[in-house]
Amino acid sequence: MTEKTRKKLIFATRNEGKIRELTALLAGLDIQVESLADYPDAPDVIEDGVTFQDNAVKKARAAAAFTGCMAVADDSGLMVDALDGRPGVFSARYAGEDATDENNIEKLLSALDGMPREKRGAAFRCVLVLYRPDGNCEAFEGVWKGKIADAPAGEGGFGYDPVFIVPEYGKTVAELPIELKNRLSHRAKAFKKLRERLADMTM
Image 1 (cartoon, rainbow, N blue to C red):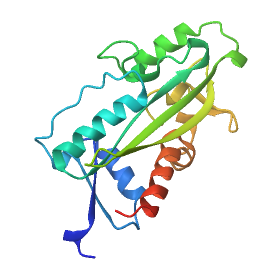
Image 2: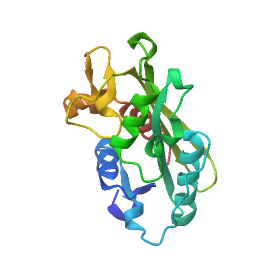
Image 3: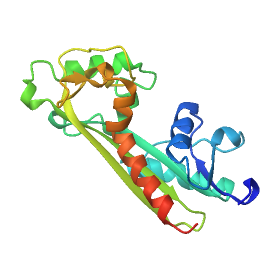
Image 4: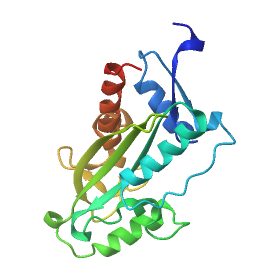
């Protein structure tokens, strides 16, 4: 099959790190991966859904409508048991619209101040949505369970990685090698399911 006739999949993001990740994940499948970086006129989408899936559907649907191709979008965040699932869909802006990772972590640790380790359960959750131009869509979820540390540790990763402890390793995500993180993470789990579906489906 030539490059011109390969099926296209549009990843509804302009984040080059994400598109590299998806392209690597789909290596070996006869799919041409593009992103919104290839479509500069594509409209921006306001992520105002009440769930991760709401936001992912909204982004994937807009990309499919604009390009006429299958599209995939993701939304993810941190859910803390003691905070009734917060920050959830507000993870990136937990401490405000212009919050830095450090601001968000500071607010989270303040909210959990004095909370014993056994009550600091949390999970990263990722929802991927595959959306077709005919309106059919499917969702794929990945969850990574852990606990929230008392203080940040580690230099790697981003977001809440420095305070998310992976119990089986006794370290925060920011202390783990990136290769290990990419095998264990919520995103890796969701993307693995997506790959399996794309490999099986007739496109």
